Length: 190
Ligand code: AMP
Image 1 (tube, helix red, strand yellow):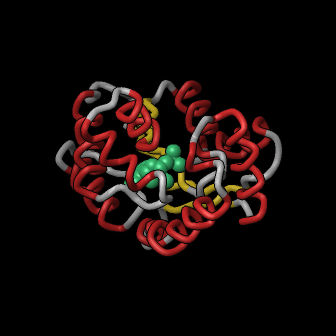
Image 2: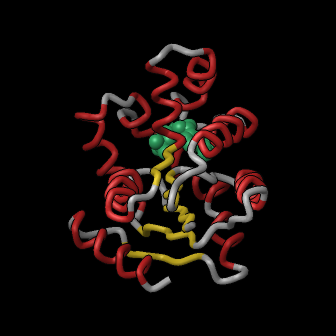
């Protein structure tokens, strides 16, 4: 069982690459952002709560996010591997994920961070906003807030898994195929 965290700031290409990797390796792709957007689309109570944070570029509270993630993992116990995309986003979530996996005698195999400069990220997200319909993509102030939250709350997760050598970086600028190739090579070498 392989459990990979695809890590990086908003707009670093995690979603695109996670989908491609899941397809190639026949792994389950779990994106907490996608799960929230599905809840919002279905107008659930959880979706409404999440929306009030997402629209401001803030993290949805841990108890909501971890509960949703746990449910998704429990529904899919019979998989060869998982690509976690957008989770964990802080150290408490990383600890909860480790616990959840340990209950199943599993662990995170690797965290792979896509490295992209801030200005490139902002341009990419504003470009994505033209087709994504995501309100959190359309406003530069909200995007900057998401980057700030990433630097302050999410980036420490890289160090959390680095302590025992499980964190890796991949340069996230180039064509989708070039970046996919870099990721594939790294995963094959694990
Ligand atoms: P994403 O699609 O990964 O960019 O996520 C979109 C938004 O959903 C984020 O800006 C957060 O508001 C929220 N979100 C997604 N994943 C998490 C998480 N693990 N913890 C808290 N909030 C999250």
